Every structure is written in C-alpha cells, then in structure tokens.
Image (cartoon, rainbow, N blue to C red):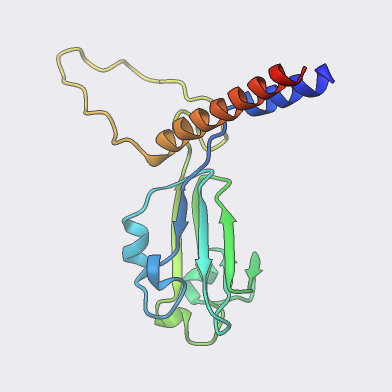
Length: 177
C-alpha cells in the first residue's frame, strides 16, 4: 500500500510541459479558402508543438518532401492523413511540407510549409547548446530578452494543478489511514 502511494505521489509531482497546439488555418481550418503562407508566417513552430488539421471529406492531408510540395505531387507521400481531424506532433527541427492531394487543391494554394525550430536551450539533435566563438563585447548593449511563449505559463499552471491534486491525495490518505 505504501508503495502505491509513493508511486502515485511521484507521478503527480512530476512536472508536465506541453507544446503549443496550432490549429491550421485557424477558424477556416484545412480548406481552399485559407492563405496558409500568411498563416504560417505569423506562427512560431517549436519541436514538441502540434498541428491540428480540421477538414471535411473532400480533403486529406499528405506530408510530402520539398519536391512534392513544390510540384503539388503526392507520388512520394511520406504519410497520408484522412478522417476530418488530424493532429501531428512536430518532433524534429527543420521544414515540414503538407499538401491536399485532392486534384487541383494544392495548385490553388492548399499547401503548408512549416519551419520547425528546436526547443529553447537545445539544438536540433536535442543536446544542450554550448556557446562558441568569441564572447560579445561588454561595450555593446545586449538585445532585449525574447517574448514569453505560452509554453512557460502552461507549464507553471499545470505544475500548480498537479501540486493541488497531490495535496488533495495526501490529505485524503492521511485521514484514511
């Protein structure tokens, strides 16, 4: 019994960090009416984030290479998604290419290029970053810090929630035994 309680406490005390979810095309979803180049340029895609494609039965999502993206061809599709709602986790830094394989849709603009960047403090391989080269001059002013992303606040809120749940369980078990 004590082992189960210890495992439960350990599981609840482990911090959880979630990436951002990007709804492709926002309210327009994956459709012929959205401007995906403009939409993507307003986003920052980070390893760990997800893309949510929502679409009707006339559309699908094909992940393709750069050549397939440029030529609107699904002949060498990496992965095909269908079913109306698709969530894709961004697992590596670099470009990712998506098109709608329905004839004519890609050539009419239903294609998406996503440039995924490494999470803060890591390189694309996932290893910690190490500064290289000569240190900056002390005379030059340092640039302002980057704007806060929603990931940090989500992590903080989730940690507070997990801590609250942990307190409830500890209190409950204290009264039970």
